[in-house]
Length: 103
Length: 168
Image (tube, rainbow over all chains, first blue to last red; front, side, top):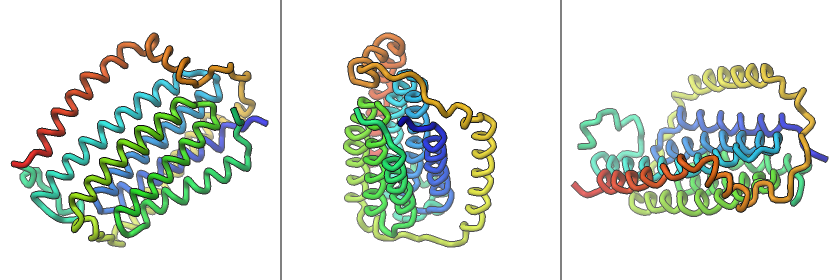
């Protein structure tokens, strides 16, 4: 039996919401970057579900691009975090409120 | 190729939601990263059941391998920061408001798309659907220019990351 589309869409929406909540609520910088990755994963799940549903591979090709952009985003975000940890060793994202701390 | 039954999907969704919620709730960042790894592997299993072999492979290799290693390196380099975890409860009310708004928006969007009327999945897939071969052909024909543009993007990223993370 094939699966209806709706549960998969709801699952990806829930993943996206959890990621957005993580960005707003959690103050640790590392968990912030993880939450952004969770947002991208929610979008990916939507792409793959619709691609499966329509029997179309274009959605999967886009997931491929999103995966690579996520890798780039993770590397850049963590490099910025390393820079910020060196100058301001705090585990609280609210402490990083000035760009001058990064020079 | 297995098809995704309701039971399997329920099980996988449960693991997915539990591990992603644990990512936000656990105290130490290392535990958060590990539960995020569980999330990624569960997603890879769902992709595999949705006939997306290549995406599932890439999910394990790129996310479960490369990105997780970068996170582990950062945790390793800054262990003293990794232990501290100032979680305040002050933002919880605004987070609840935001979550309600988000849920309302998403349910409106889902209702507007009238997904339930689409509920009969399509034709049976061909035997090469979602494999490395067919998706690779798609990437090298339809998506050739974006695919090639990824390469200078990666090069720029490498230079930028080295510049940002270097010792002043």
